[in-house]
Image (tube, rainbow, N blue to C red; front, side, top):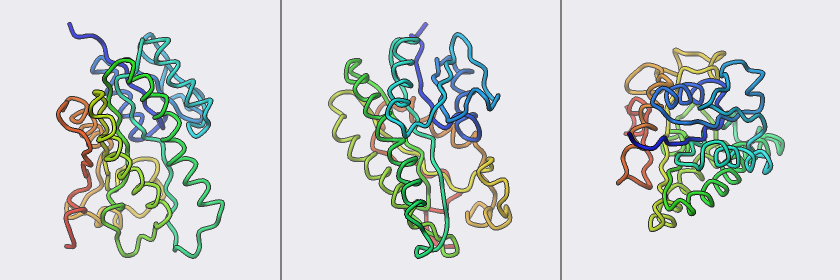
Length: 240
């Protein structure tokens, strides 16, 4: 029987992160799940194969604790999914410095610290895989959805995915990204679904399970690195 793999999932209390955590557990992974208030959210229950770590992943100490928990509880880190993120759409001139700092803190610092600690561990193992969750809008902006500052951060994650794939290929560490369209999660619970679904040529909302399918494909596809998979109903392909 193959050795159990250990995954870290950030933003795990709901939506894509919750779906991914449950899928990983169902497929035999050991998981360290993180979000700001994970234990009080009540959506996951700690077990012998699931460790819950509360805290803001943008805090260096939280990031350190997440990776340390994976190593101490389960012996290493095979997969890190940087799922935690926020999205604040508004006209460019309406953004405040507070908006900018929130977006950079969660979307970039939340990636930076935990990925550094994970890569350090993966170098000792001589293997590992990191998946970043970005957005299709980073490659294909849409009129009527002004989101320039979030796209600085998500576009940056696309770029760093490719850069790190090249930097660490010789050490057995892979980096990939999944770029979703509009997914039916609590993030969009107050939004206009008719508008959102028509942002895709396949005119429906995506499901969290469809993002998870892409992540699981990437984790199994050991010859794939530096890839950005768009799970967006074809939105990235062009204007329709």
